[in-house]
Length: 405
Image (spheres, rainbow, N blue to C red):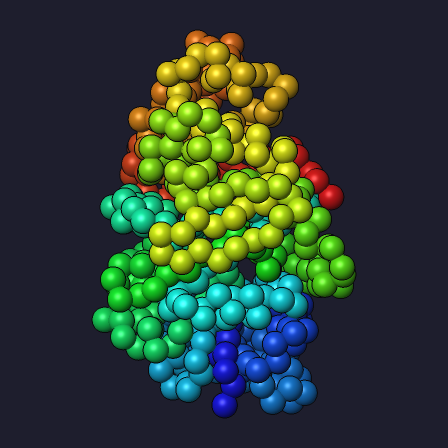
């Protein structure tokens, strides 16, 4: 039997599997079994999988009628029925770098659950990079009661030991309507004190979100977008070049808010407060286990983005510093707006204070008003719980205004 079981849930994307699965077949670690789980998938998926399973006996396809929520109940028996040591997950419209399996399973040498960095490709080639040190004491514990948990929704960057999954009180299972399937599952691991957690920032895959501008694309259009990325992702230096261009979005502002990183004396100290050791862009990544900081290679511009998150958490405590980091021309309005709305997931009071400081210290009253209007809508839509309409629109504005590639 294979050492690693890979699960790929699929519902309606069909043709994107013709890019996602070849990225698995290109792995430098060939010791895997891929199970594609159809959750009410169309006939086109049956056709695609018939060809793929006939040509590679490491691939299986299990079609099912549309299940509850995201078909999570179909995943649990696949994990329990396997004898694999490790379990990974593939998004049916995403692409892995050839090092993905080797990196994630290698990080499980002293851990039961690991999460890596998350590179997301938006419309017009906008690139963002998400990461956090989930092995850092206090970070997960303090974030568990947030209306929107710190753990971001993602399948690709997570791997775990199957034995740890079997020890959980509950595995993959449907959740309440509107809840994120993935982070609910990951919290079951993170809430179990027996689970040894590891974390690293190194990105080894590309995530292409179905929302944020792709809702109206046909399966053929989606595949046409993915194929050029599949062709070049394993070229020498290609993934590293993407990582250097990426914006630091998502979990960094939220983690700073959770651990009061605004109290730190500077952005470097703020990152260390959330379990990250910032290093130069040429330096190496490290795997962090419980109580260890993980290294995060950053370009000067990316470090400046982390500085913005720190300044927004700090608010008007240091007027000169706040004004400097939010000055017109240093960061676009879209970046500041996004950082504040992400910050609101953890501390809406800090987000409001940051908006007020934008008006009083940075001379940006129009941007401050936009932030307050968004936070008011956020409150109407259920506090910091997931407000898809609001943040989807915000994400579209950002990604359409700042193409990178």
